[in-house]
Image (cartoon, rainbow, N blue to C red):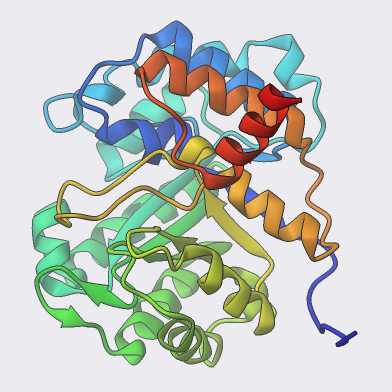
Length: 312
C-alpha cells in the first residue's frame, strides 16, 4: 500500500446555512434554519457559518439574520458544546455593527481575485473592497472579534476566464496582513482541476502559511472532491462545505453548489483523516433540510448511503 503523506485531522467549516441557503428562491422559515444549525452542531461540526448581515434588499433569504444569530447564541444546547464557532458574513461596517449588536463573536469578509466579479458581486473594485475590509477588520480587532477572509474566483472567473494565481495570492496576502486569521480560497465557478488548484495553492502558500489557508470548492464540473484531495497533498487542513450540497452563485451562471459535507466527510473517513463528524447525524441533517426544500440531497454519498439503508 502506498504511504500517503496526508494530514491526520481536518477542520470542516459548514457554510450551508449561509452560503447554501442564500441562493434558494423560496424563503426558508427562521425556525427551520435554527433547527438545521442545531442538527449540524450535534453532528460534530465545529464551525458553522449561520447567516449573513447583508441588506435584505439584495439577499432576502438573510433578512432574519438577527433572529437566527440570537437564537443560536442563546441556545444552551449549542453553547454547551466546547469549541463550536458560529461565524457570520458581513459586507461592510454597517453589516458589522448589526452583527455585533446581535452578539456575533466571529465574522467573515469576502473579496475576489477578479476585478469583474468584484464589481458584479459587491459593486466595487478589488482595491476599494480591501479598503472597506480594512475598516471592518480594525473595528473587529478593537473588540477582539475573529475575522475570516474569503476570496472568490481563485481559479476562474465567469467574466474574465482563467485567473492568474499570483492575483489570488496577492489578495490572500492582503487579507492576512490586515488581520484575517484564515483565508478561504473559493473556486466559485467550480472550473478548477487538481492541476490548476495546486498551482493556485502553491502561489498562495508562497505568500501565506498553508495553515492559514482553506479550500472552498464548488462542484459544477464534478471536480470538488478531486480538488480537495489535491489540496490535502499540499498540506491544506481546512475545507468549507455545505450540507446536502446546497448553494450556487447568482453571478456565475451554471455554477452549482458547494461540495457536499457528506461527500467531504466520506472522503476523509476513507483516508483515515479525523473530522469529529458523525456521519449518521450528518445524513439526518441533510435529509431534514432537503425535505424542507422539497428535493433530494445533491450529495452522491448521501443518496447512496440512504438508498442502501432503505434496501436493508
